[in-house]
Structures are given as structure tokens and as C-alpha cells.
Image 1 (cartoon, rainbow, N blue to C red):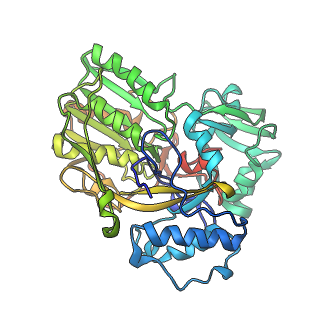
Image 2 (image 1 turned 90 degrees about the vertical axis):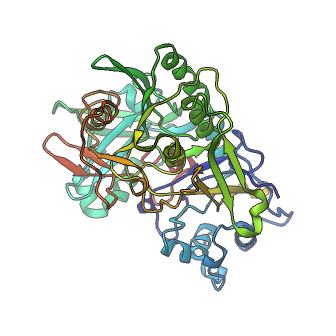
Length: 477
């Protein structure tokens, strides 16, 4: 069996039910951008529920990071799905906040398509809801998707879906009622949406869901140089680490940063749930000119698999910069590979790296992939811890507890991502320039977005059974 450090992601626990599918994702099988894993004892028998459940248990028994936290008394016959059985097996780890629905089963074909090309179908917007106010807002829109073509973008509010108001849907069935009203993310599904734009105007748009490619770095705002009082600051908004093409796009961004002499960087990970470790490695290398051979991160498996432990060192990139100060924008949606990159630079930058925004999700563990191709089953098993050069890594409650500096800021959806006047970007610029800021409180905060009147508590809109794309890109519809 081969183990490797390929993928590290997380999904907000609130998006799942005890018997739902999905959780988070990671990979095995030789590293790089590949999505596949070991066969995990694949056999030629039928893909019956019992057979698939037995196979899943065997993989957990062999590789699970917390073997003493597996409930081996669980009767598989009591569960009508593989995911329900898995959730019951790892319930003791979940009770200790070590596996918050991170171990899950998914489709090999669908996940590979996502990693290799960003392939997905739907509206192409990331949504958040305010359960108290019963409102749903667009946090960002993917440029090649159908919703953006209809003028739906960050700050837009979905007021009604097909004649049903969001207020009524939330009142009767909560956030899942909104998900249900939006319908399946299949090409050809059409919905009438009443949209309230940030300027207060309302329009009705007929949007037909379609296939599109998820772009990990927006061509509009994803990579840019901000002039802060004469100092050039590099800004990167990486939406996800899961798409392999992010490596190329990051390299292209750093060509410009290097040519302009940029050494201060904003990493905007506010909705980034993680993804490919190979992408994290490239980003780390691009930020660390002169550190080749020094420790970037360490992968630590359970004792019986310690021979698979790895130390990843910084490599060389032609257009790397020597970052002297880094501001990492995060929210509770920021997880896994995003947290790993921030944690990796603490030993080298100390108080010159800060978390901006709110506390992060807190997922210092990653998964390997075990494939059973006959059933199109890929099991993502929590199997390793990720630590930095100083062996720091148990940030289960979020990065704020380990970051040398933190600055509290809201997610202001009334302004574009990358806008220097947007609350989180503005605060990041303050930190980089040495200006004062208020620290993040000890308790983690949910994803927040600023409405015109005041900051409101908002959480990412997730179905009870998310698709591979929704697992990797929380809030995607």
C-alpha cells in the first residue's frame, strides 16, 4: 500500500448530517496532482451495500489516524448507506473534534474531473445565509458560469426562487429548503431568481445551470499588485487548492510580483477549504526564495505506519520572491491546505505573519485516498497530521491560537474581493505596513459578511449530501 501527501481539504461540519455524505478530501498514490489512491483490497465481488461497507471498514482499520477512536461495536446492518456506517465508526473521533466529517466516500470519476480540469455544473456562485434574518447572499461568482453572465455577483442577494421567497423557504425548512429550491446541479436545470443588487435595485433572472470550469484564481481580482502609500503589495485570492491548474496560475502571478520587487504579500484564503498539497508546495516555494532545503511541512501517520512519514522541504521556483511579511485572510471556511501554508511560515517569519479576519476552521489533519474502481468508490480516510518545522500543528480550534499575530476584520460583501477598501484587505494592508489592529478573539467566529448596516453572522450554504465540488469549494451552487 502506498501512502502519500496529495490532498488536504475540509468541509464545514454544519453542512452535514450524521448520516450524510461528504466531509473532506485528500489523496495517496505518488503525490503530484493525481486524484487516485491505492486499491485498498478491491475484489471482484458485487458492489452490494454490505460489501462496500466491509471494504470501508477494512481501510479504516488499516490506516485511520486515530485507531483507538474507531467504534468497532457498530453494526453495519443498522445503516442504509456506506457514509452513514462510516460516520458511526468515526463518531468517537468526531466527539473529540478530531474528525469532523472529514472521512467520507465519494466518486472516483467526479473527483478526478474536478482535480484535472475544474469541471463542474451548476449556477457557479458561492452562497452564504443568515439564518436569523432569513437571507441568502452571493459571496463570489465564477466568471465562466451562467449566474455571472446574468449579472449575479458578490453582494447580490437572492430574494426569491421560482416564486418562493427565501424568507418563506428559510422559515419553513431552514437552509436546506433553499438548497432544495435551487434544484440539482445538473446542466439544463433552469431557475427563476429574483435578485436584489447591492444598489438596492431588484431584477428577475432566468438562469440555466450549465457545465463550466472552476477557475482557482479569478482573472478579475485574483492576482494583483496594490499600491499602499508607495509600497507595492502582492495580493493573491486563491479560491481552492483542489484544481491542478492553480500551480500554473500562481506561477504566472509571481512573475509579475518578482518583476515589481514585491516582498509583502496578502494571501486571501477567506473561503478556501483546501485541496492539493502539490499546489500548497508550489505556493510555499514561490514565497520562499533562498529557503531551498529547509522544512516546509511534515506529514505524520499513525505509529503503525510511521515508515510513511515524510518531510517536505522548500524547493526552487524561477520566479520566487523572498516574502518578508505575509497577511493571511481567513474565516471559519479557511481550512486544511490553507492553514498548512500559513502554519508553515510561522517558524521563519514569526511576528511578520498574521491571520486577518476571523479564526479558521481548524483542520491540522489530512486524508489518503483508497480506491475501489469496480464500484467507483473513493474513500477519503483521515490518516495523517500536518506539522511545521517546529512540529506545531494541533490547531484543531483554528489558527488564531498558534499565529504570532492576528487582526480582527469583517468580510465586507458590499465591496469586491481584492478592493483595498474592503474590510479584510484594508486590515491586511494595515498589518503589512506596521499599523495597529485589534486581535481576533479566542473563540472562533463563523463566516461573516458585512451588510450595509452592520456585520451579520452568515454561514456557507451547503446541502446535506454535497458533491465533490461542493466538498472542496464550500458554499458552491
